[in-house]
Length: 489
Ligand code: DC
Image (cartoon, rainbow, N blue to C red; front, side, top):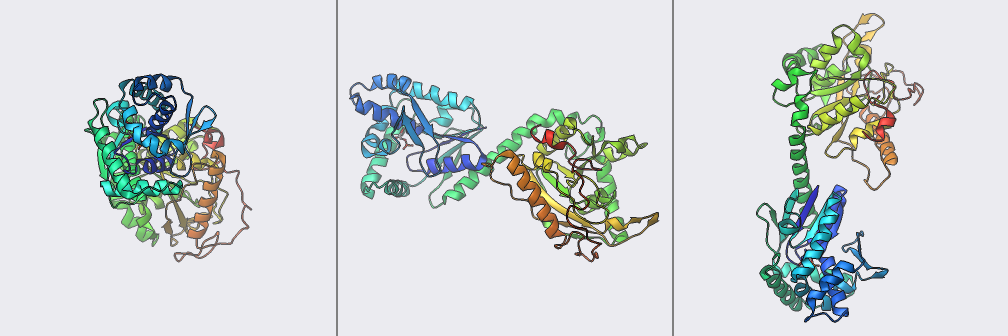
């Protein structure tokens, strides 16, 4: 995805663009730093103001390297020399507009920026990023702010670098650059017709970042849905799915769950808690503990949306069972192997904004204990735009004891969505953190005991943690897609 953020000097572009890039795990390019660097080199070479066209040659040959860093500014190097502070000094600021108005200079630097963009996932911040450099960017933003606010921001920025400059001087400088940048013949500063304009006066950085990140997610979601529509049409084995509201909802599910919930709830005196945590839109990975074969029904009754369960492939060999649960939206996974088809189907469903259900302990724990969580769950949980919702069921393990059928009280408790670990951590570590967080969430939703004592369900005999450890991959429903696959689809 390419995001362009254009706007006048001091509109907050640099900070916002850097934060947006960080937030979305994208690279960030401060194009102003490029123009400033060429201006510095041109000044040093005595090319300003008479021989500025020659600055294009400098732009072509100079070994310029930009490095994003955690504070406000990009670090800039020319060969081994760092020019980060110099390029933001008053002399460069005074001449940069004139140098950047030279068509030959712009031509070279535009090509440079396009090359960067061709590598994908980039937030490009500048003056003409959305109008000239990447006119077909996925999201174009134009930031504006009052001139006084912009001058104040620039003053703070300079102060942080140990440079003191009077506000009036900064206002005058910004006004001059504004009129120069907007009035120049080549690539003047202007809002692209399809850019979203955000007036940042009075807004905090995080509010602006939040707005842009949300717009980016929406655009991404829309693009994905467009891309996936034909793919979803091919949910071949689930032909009914095409007939209903969401491309992922199956007709049988909608029909059955139209009347099943009241009966089912009454039969098991069901308690449903935390339903407010369930997102009513978008991709959800519903991760549940697992105690009974009937758990998918309890979750189905308790959830406001259809859940597509990953279910063990053996069920498709029991008469019509596979077909029936398939019509309810379940899909098969082969246990004990890297089942790429199952992973693909789960990812397709998530990308289409559906709810995918997993039992990440791998198999049922009929004694009410919690098994270890298969870190393979992270393959789905770490996908962008996926909300991972922990949920626990209590009481379902008592329904079938021996050959006797009982109607115990059953509760379903949804927890708040998991917070994802920082994208900066290695993938394996993030997977481990997700697994630990999920287990902790299960544990806390169970009321702090493995057997659970909440929701009127008496605690079952507790076994020490890990006493009934499955290796996590063999499961009746679950993340059997395996860790091998977990390394990437
Ligand atoms: O964003 P900034 O203030 O660091 O930019 C410095 C100057 O560079 C600005 O006056 C206009 C020019 N510039 C440009 O013409 N095109 C860009 N894409 C970025 C900056």
